[in-house]
Image 1 (tube, rainbow over the protein chains, first blue to last red):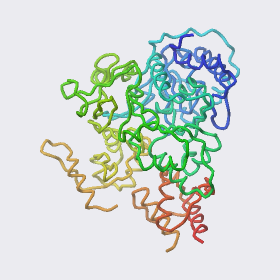
Image 2: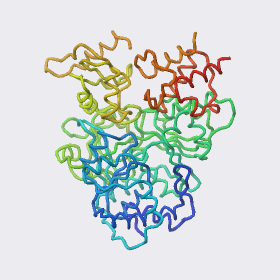
Image 3: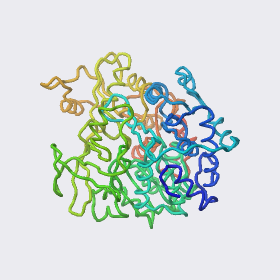
Image 4: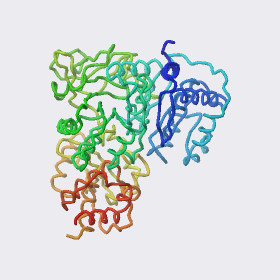
Length: 486
Length: 79
């Protein structure tokens, strides 16, 4: 069978090794054969309840079978983070206009919009009892997923991917990481992020057991979670790797996790953390990576290459190219800093219902202007220096200053708001003007946007300084930081 | 120093905000918006401030339930 559609990744695996464990979720284990069967029944169910080809299915709880079912039924899945509730979920529903929302506690938001709702219980019943029937297959160029992400707009926007783009990206990453049949991949990340989501596909390609952790398993319980699952692979973010290194350093027993591979993306990994982890876990290898949802992954380091090329985030995926260009789009030689432009079949289809922004960032099919700046060495290794726009990382997740500012303006009593993105010497700070306290602003924000996006510091100030262009003077704001203590 | 006060100072530092008079029954996750990463930061703070030595194998969810339970844990491990 040629692997062109996303669910073929699962079908190939289920054909060859149906008995291997595929997923553990909430202490329940599914084999590849079982996952295949459940996804087939759910695909029939999706068609029966009226989800059309191209119809969106919004999923609020991790559900690998339903993700593959949407693929099989020609529908478009969209997994949202568990913290996307209330106004943030309403935005997704209004933007994606789904045919189905799977939720246990936010049904009213969908019903009000005439969107069909299913509970996780109803989905579980269909996964077991729905009668098998033929399902017409989608085309490789059909859309398969929407992944919401932040960036230079006041509300999150969705990156649209087709089957062939998703399968190409998954296969290209697999060629570099090579998960194995005896691997247990412990996933501490939400499937709403592409880094978490693609663990499902990489696991299926490798025949690995993908163990989905919950967010409460990733703090002090992280070591125990790794041991209980028998994890050999950990897709990490810097904060999580730092937590792991700290926990290992405090441990009184000599037990060591069975990890053989740690990957990182999202933000630069401190070398000191890697040194600690390598000392504590003999045999651990590290592969640093760089990517953005718009093309899933840009580059991956060979194992432990960070020891030889500190600061690099690797070489482009096989079959893709990264060109460093100047302001007018002219390619630059090695060693010169410019914008990374990605050329390859990993470049996704664009932004959902944002034609102008799509034209700007995706000038033609298969080409992505990343908005990230950096340089290439003479061997083709990439080094990221920073971003041009107002997007930054909070706890490893992408956050847009514009989005936070818009949300802050929606809080009662706030007259002005400005976010200063994090720098080496301070973290992201939200400045507000109005009849409010820092606490009331943070509480208000929690009702409008996901808590993980909220800056760690909020300062109420008398006024927000403007520069001679009438724009917020973020440099002047930074100087306020030094003068105040919180 | 009174552990109850040190714990509150550590929490204020991790959350980067003034939190006067948090009651013992305030829940770290639900009321104070802690996440799993900030819990680790809190442990680091408590070690630095109070000289508590944390053993990850002894930590369970009950320890991090409320301001009161974390204070109890710290007090017990000071001895």
